Amino acid sequence: MPLVLILLQGLLCSCTVGNTHEPGTVTIALDEAPQNLDARIGIDATSESLIQLIYGSLVKRSRDFAIEPDLALS
Image 1 (cartoon, rainbow, N blue to C red):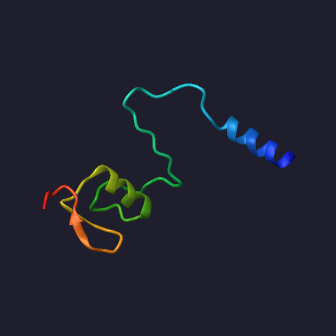
Image 2: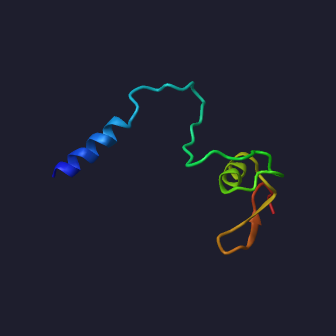
């Protein structure tokens, strides 16, 4: 039971009370910083994840690696 209380206390202390960001601001938690946000240069996993969120492409690959439209309509 004490372990549950310690975990609960840690969870509650990590929550923020107020909104400290401006309206319209998006906050993303990352496990490491991206090396580069230039789609031509950033090849680490964090950079590639953020590049996919920031930039759209005409087509993308599905989970089974089939090509499907992203920005393209057909």
